Amino acid sequence: MKRNVRQWMIRTGATAVASVAAALCLSSCGSGSGDAGNPTFRAYRELWERTRPTDYRYTFERSAFAPPETLRKVVIVVRGGRTVSVTPFDEGAPIDRSAYTPYDTIEELFDVLEDADRKGAYEILTAFDIEYGYPAQVRIDYKQELADDENAFQVTELEPMP
Image (cartoon, rainbow, N blue to C red; front, top):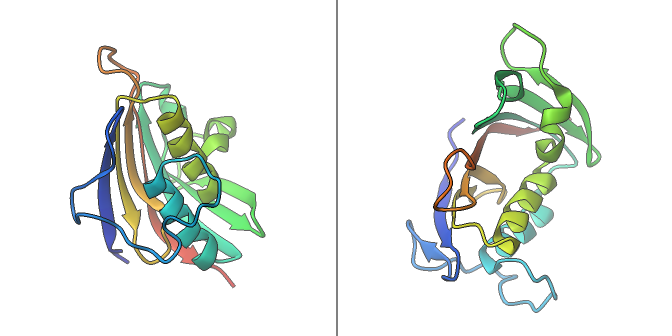
């Protein structure tokens, strides 16, 4: 199922710039919750927290300068906020389960974004699902002058589970 997404670009020292819309206006924007994170990430995270299913699964794929066994496309199953399985999307060589730990819940994907923003990453490109608010596509370039420090991932086929 193809989902609708909003795309955002964050550069160090700049405010969020919408590439799809001029601004995002959710009921929780500017709520003064005390979260020091980027307002765009915070708004989508709040949408996720309001709409997230208790149990869900999603397909996750990462690209980075890393060993191939850590970059396999996987299906992640979360029940009650805890990851219960991470399995290869296609049959083949086993995966390095520990390589997926920072990405094995949607909350952790938001943590990756907020951490990159807090550390002053040069560029953060994101596309968020507008129904649930999860980060559907992310590309982070931590330092402009460095090669091979980029981290990218995509979430597809997020489905609530009974």
